[in-house]
Image (cartoon, rainbow, N blue to C red):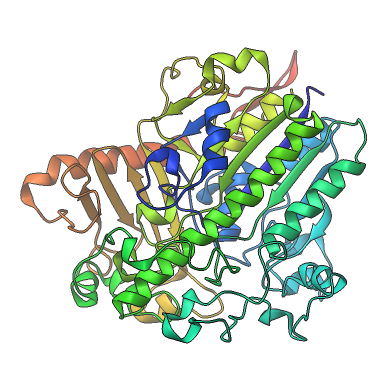
Length: 514
């Protein structure tokens, strides 16, 4: 085995929120330093949302239309391999700190199995050291707090409640108030401590650690010192129309999203701005804790043998387009950070590099597998980024556009299905996004959910749909053709690229480009 792997995911981190990329407010000195010692992928995209589907793509290297785990709670096909299983086959013991939001394939467990009652299962292949899913109440964090003498709420779901007794808490918008615990006692600090403690005991065997930080996922709450780190008056303008009604007029789906409780942003301008300021404070806290972990790797002497990969499952609208959370077709939902530091001398020419061509979440699994010397499975839709780590030029035939899919069906609630009288299979959109244009195609008929086209050169905030502009017909044709070709080329190749021969038996071929 060539060395150690530290694979870190944050949850809901916008791709623009790095000071290394010139963000006007948030400061991320530790991620910036990691990028300076490695490679920063400045045009990196999650291929779907929310958490479960996006992580399925990240861990299996496959697009949403391939793995079909389309929603939190949609089972993940057990026939698909993943980065943990492949690393285990390569001799590692992949361990988990946090969560993977993997929903069990019901064909692999008996009726009534407890795994059928949660979407927060552990991805096969990972050995959980600390499995602490948020919706279950962050129970492990709560136990740790109690062991430190903290006053822990009896209901673990109240761990992120605000401290309304804090001076000034009632004089500011709601998300300004700090949480109940200090910066040394947050869930992020707890998870960092657990990883360090594990590595201190791990011995000389190469490790494969997946650290899955919850933050900056909601609840929008910070410990004291981070709660007022950024002032709401300094928050950059939102990418949004002046009023919610103007935003909703852009498209029928956006009309629903921007008005939906829990998805539509607050009507009060100061509340929206404070939420974004609080969100950036959450990012700063994660950056500090990540810096603590990376610093420990340096002082322990392990950094020189450890591949470090830091990314996120998806982004955060944070008030853009009068929405919060993730979803739709927006850059803020899908653009995420990716920073990779390869310790090998052969990667010295790539250090400090910034990659501007589109890269996607499906590229992370093959990058890790190639680094540890494992074969990349035929199922994988992405491509290794080793060329970037080693400072080589962009490969021939590299993608020129990013692709995203968002499935908004829900077999339990059926909100979209009832709203538009649609079958579930019609409740999905697919996006192709180049530097110039973004095209959004819906499975539903255009009379119900019409396609969208944004000219990103003139309208980087995605405010004005120009699909109905008669002069844009060529742009729509080119984008729709590219989208169709992408889908055709990314059909499942597990068996299609295999053949049984009379003289050599089974032959399997993985293409070098598609």
